[in-house]
Length: 122
Image (cartoon, rainbow, N blue to C red; front, side, top):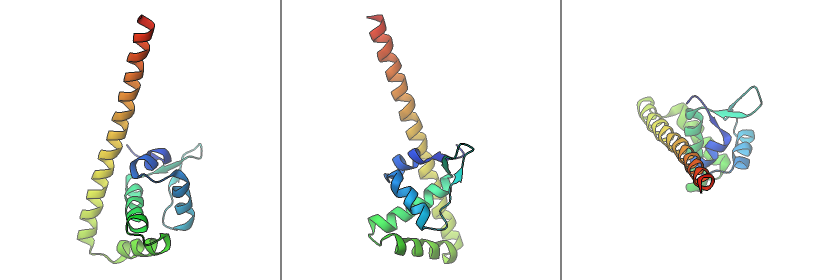
């Protein structure tokens, strides 16, 4: 999976799409690519950044401005080895969550097909 749509990021992180769009306007280093149709496409690394920003801004209650500043400092000055290990773990967690979301969607589609067949066959 190369990129995540805004809806997927919304579900994975529990952050409303409106908040994601606001953060994108406010935090200069958040810049998801746009698909040819104009939709936002987040890399898993960007989703990991958003996860960390959410933790700092909302869970630790630092507010967006302070959280963005701290995250920028972490990105620029943290121990590179530790930063790489943490980024790798966040990346793996988000990949697992994205895979889980896709599996959930497939199960729901399968269940809907079975229900339709059951109704049509009865």
